[in-house]
Image (spheres, rainbow, N blue to C red):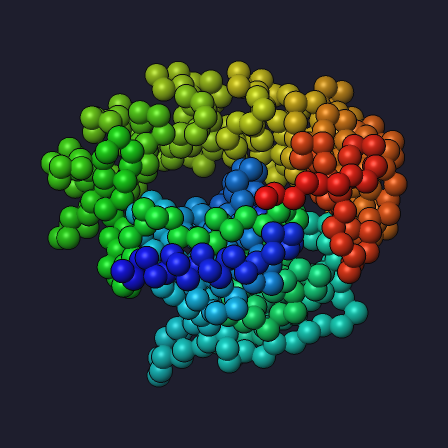
Length: 487
């Protein structure tokens, strides 16, 4: 009964939203400042080095770590692959009703729309509990920064520095760079973002945070803010067992309550693998990565047999190709599923493959490599933002350039921002706070006259001529077109 009433209420709430209303989609990736990266290279603290490696690895992967959909009425935030299992939070801003969805468990809970983040610090004499609600929020005037092509203002939350050493005290603040033309966005442990007059495009402290990589305006989709019919309500989060998780092939990971090790059972509760692993990932194809209690990596098949013993420093399965990434002494290589080495363990990181290439990093620089392990572009680039089969966009000294993959030469001057436009030869470009479209060799084909512009989808892009103006649509010639509304 509760489930039916909830579905009815959500359906009623969503029906009040006009189909033509704007919906903004924001992709966030982990971000580490250059100063922090430099410090990580020489730091004795292994946790900082591991954090830098994590941020670099995520930064070179195409998958955003946080995705958000937001307008004046609704918010949806997906978090994936950072610390916790993938989660989705959907919120009705008008009623403040909020739910957290757990896709791997097909379950959901009712939750607060956002909570104040709390830090517990134990001293010799006391336990100090600090909430972000207690921290002063200051808006910094005459300070701006461009993130994902949008101009942002700065707000900061300042920590009490009494418990910090002198080197850390100067960075003891949460920096929030926000854009006022986007609706405010808050979720999870980010209640302080309710007080920000716009969406935060960067949130970070001590040089580490999340930063928007793309901001798009898309058509409103009510299903983004609905709970799937096959999800089960849990009264509280503690009613969910995160170690009774589907792995594929009607197999489930479960945790032994005494040893806390993980095994596998089928949907008839028959044990396939006795609890002996520290972690078991979902199956990709017919294989899954596991770790033993010593956190050594191996790979099992759907029968639970170890096809690669747990003897490796690190293993990962490419989600599209029958390729295994491995690490030896902190260096990454690539092998096939017969353990034939394709690329020796000699690079700091290799990303998953896309369009026939993967990003690889070496000595703080990034290049491109193909499926045969041949270096297409040497690791000489500061940052490769994205690429297609023929060109890539790089960032160098905070300027964006197009580079021809074959000639390895820049084909454009530096711009404030560049983004491949989903058309063979077009690139979205930002220059002097105006958007336009250029070719990959730098010719302007659609003038720099827009406050905001998106890539093309099915030959159509969305643009704004003014900050407060309506969304307009253009074709690849820059001609205004009408979009037929659904329904």
